[in-house]
Length: 383
Image 1: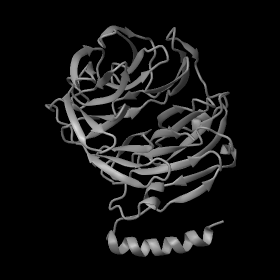
Image 2 (image 1 turned 180 degrees about the vertical axis):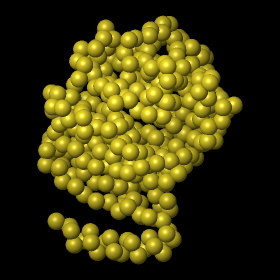
Image 3 (image 1 turned 135 degrees about the horizontal axis):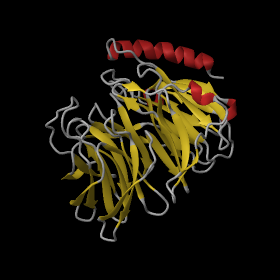
Image 4 (image 1 turned 45 degrees about the vertical axis):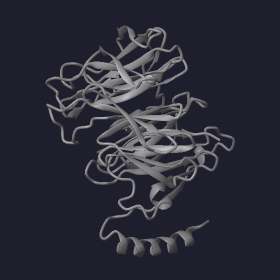
């Protein structure tokens, strides 16, 4: 074990950070062994978990789970990048691996942090105002941005999609879309953007923007539903988009979009599926529904599975051992595409450590571990 090394390294690090970073509180990396998570031949062999951290607290952190060793490492970014002032930043909103790099969208710090996917050592950053989500195609990354300030402005300007060269990390283009754009998917040379208008609850945006990537221009803005957020592409080429509703009288709802060969949206289908978040694996939609009534989350939280063909519920509770009662505020759901294990992140009270729990395909809890504050995005890494 490296306990003694960690002890002395910690003392030295604390002295160093105290002099260089004044009185900022530094959370050093810690390793935690989870025997039930060990899969020596696993591929993906692990995942990164980006923790948002409460806004304004500068507590976004990055954890790493290694399935081959069963070791969960807390706050790996700080350990690997001791000279980065303020560490990862404020509000970790999205993460993805592409071109052997891990791309971290840090919303309230107005930047995309780029690190080596295998070591988490910093490569560089791209400054983008109020950035939200990231997708990739060819030699470019595309980042959605509210553009306007973090503090909500009901008269906020239109949002934008920024185009980034993945080699130089330079911004090479920008196109206007709807207000407060969120998640995106790419299909057949076109980028689809969920516009929320979330800063104005009296006048939400209700559109999906379509961008032709070859010319990087918006070719359509299609009305779908208010306050759009999540987006996923299924194996049949259909686009699923989640409307968050208005948190009062209009519940969240999933919509299914069909597209034409020219990229335009041919059909908008309102399903009867209500959820707060979802993930798609093969022919199934895994989702949880934790509806809000104003500022309060409902106690009637459900965990269900739907069929992508029929858009109907085929399992009204995929957690079979009763441990869903331990989850206070479900915040993220992710399916391991190889093992079909289900991961649920719990934000708890939003200001202290959350948890991530792994469920077997049969719906039985395999393991759980504490995370950073507000565990947000799971990104699998492959051999």
